[in-house]
Image (cartoon, rainbow, N blue to C red; front, side):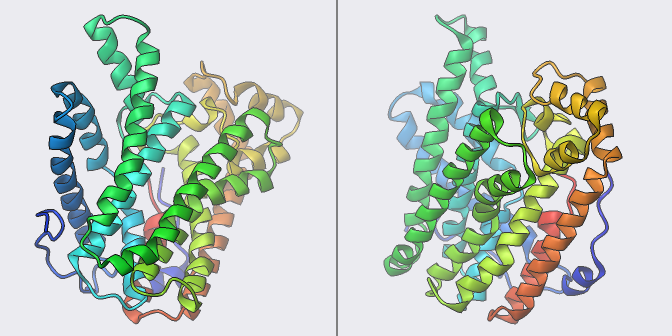
Length: 385
């Protein structure tokens, strides 16, 4: 799938544990990388690696049987775009915080929260793959079957994934509080982190409910997108960074909401498109997984609302079909395209990005942060996977 055209205005705007304090180059702004994404990814990866090494001793104290679990979590956490830590970092910088390794260690904890949500989401959706590898519940089901253990491989895999997802969620607090930031700063940020976790779980429930009893409307799908993805991907990480820097309320967090919420919706809309039209080599999941899993996305809601009788029948028959094959997926893609739903969703992305960029222009943040957040608006919405 070709990367969508980025609006011209946006192109113009965007141009005492050892793991606590990793040696890192300065994250000072450079013209060729305003958001310093490459270095943020590197330092977040280092912080996560150090944290997992520390947790190895804790897990192995219970027994070497935990080694496969640690290996699976390490592999899962090695991948990812690190957007949530990047937004947290630039929330900190935008609110006046200085570049330091401690903020990156705190921000890296958000990857543990994200990974927890992914593991549990895969269980609820019965997803086979994640980031190009078997999902955790499939890995442990296969391990059970390969070892010829007693009971059901599927039940064992589901149980293991639920526990590991819970462990990742628990580790979020552990890594956050051991980041090396002052206790007062961590207390300021805790309320945002707690809110973030509550909202993403609420969003996951709305998503689950939507598949079972949703009304299939665009408005309903947008509400799921806001709570399941938009807030915890962009808005709350920015506000967490601001709170850690000493701005838990006032104009800076409000500006981050005005920028982050529409951009977060645009991020989810891009995911909706990738879930049907994406390249599996880029997304790490089979094309049309959203259709197979019965996701009531904005993209499919638009298509269903615009569909004629024959087109509606295709969507109704294919959506949520676990046996969906490529021929059936191609039929759904044709309906989405022919009804104009794909073009409408792209227009919605552009409109939400434009709203976010307009809010950014008025935000009372540092010039460095403004340039970085403009760049992150592109990274979050103009992507292949």
